[in-house]
Image 1 (cartoon, one colour):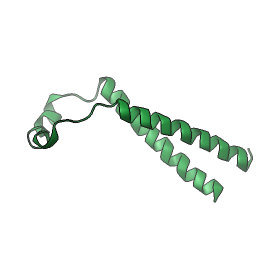
Image 2: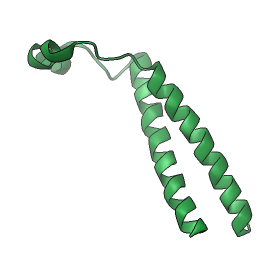
Image 3: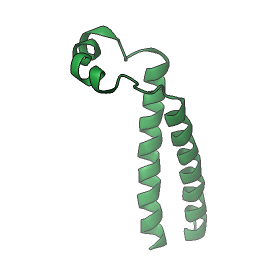
Image 4: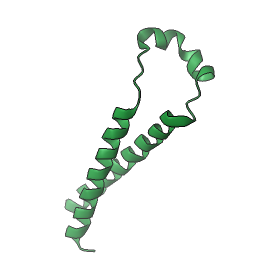
Length: 82
């Protein structure tokens, strides 16, 4: 694979990962608890709501994978282009 083809492939992966990252962040529900949630909601986070299952967990994993792919593609693209 030539340098130009590798660069184009990395740019395509970078574009796709950025779109996945934007979509997964926008689809996540916001934490609207505010200051009261940070004071009294600590126990509820630990013992109450399970975040290991369901829609939120899938979006969280997609966001993590998208961010890792985005960072790796960015670093490799800089190394190849430079």
